[in-house]
Length: 245
Image 1 (cartoon, one colour):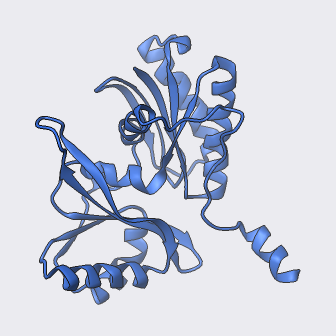
Image 2: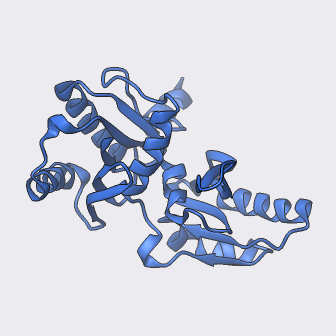
């Protein structure tokens, strides 16, 4: 199975081509350009460097949200356009789940945090557990489904989980929200913790693809026409309109 994977949900723009369990190519950039400037040129470079025939792609895995409203719309529009042109399905991958996949197989509790502005973060809690069958690897287990909350709330829940289980399990934080809330986390956390290093603390399209393969096999897919981002909360314009109403 060959997937094209895209992630433009945050500050990072990332695209990858993955076939079965091999990442053929990945292009990731985290710089001061908008995704509308970077995403299509990145895709063209991947196609050129790998001599890719787009018609050999079976599906498009996309980080479907939450995240930046503009970034999600750009990624969604790109995936929809390609999906319609190639007549292939789209696999909507939850953004925070894919971010947690950076730490496949790790023993720590994983807490991705993306800066959602307005003193909030997009976050969730995850851990990897050994699969039921020998040699099947690890399963991503969702301890807390992706959500948008204040950072104090997610840290409080981590503390409560540790108390309830009487466990000293370490938690690892990653995502662009770490640089914004590092001091706040250090002030509130009551369990052993660490922050992910630069090599694995941001979105990667190859992680979107890896999780996308699992979702595809479980029947999670959409037509290009029906795909839409999952914002988790109203946009600023929608909030202002609701307040006026």
